[in-house]
Image (cartoon, rainbow, N blue to C red; front, side, top):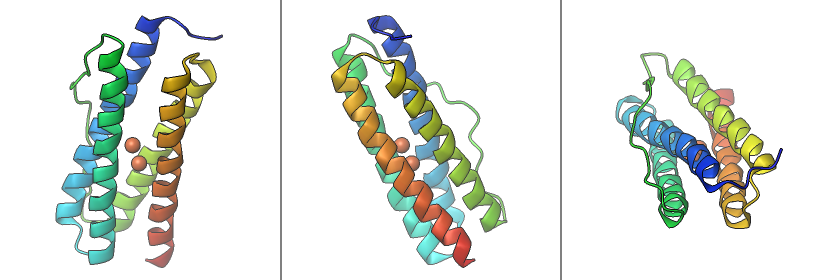
Length: 137
Ligand SMILES: [Fe+2]
Ligand SMILES: [Fe+2]
């Protein structure tokens, strides 16, 4: 199925926008409490990438007459266990990658697909960075 309807595209972009908002919140908080310097600085830098993804998505949404949704789902912050925190961050990246790849297949809008492809490349890099940190623990 190919989606061309602007309303449907806006709904999908708002799902993405909320995921990016959650990732931004989660990583920002985690960067404050993770004691390992390298991992917390990496998490902080990636939080900034996620916020940049919010800007890109908000631009696509507003250009198509929509408004970005600031509704926040459940945000799981890191606890005492740094490995568990990184695993949760890796899951967050994987959820995003799967949703973006699903949308890229069904959205018939070159500009949107171009931005989603760019974001998905960055999410894959994030996941790789987190995986490398877990491997070193
Ligand atoms: Fe992102
Ligand atoms: Fe990411």
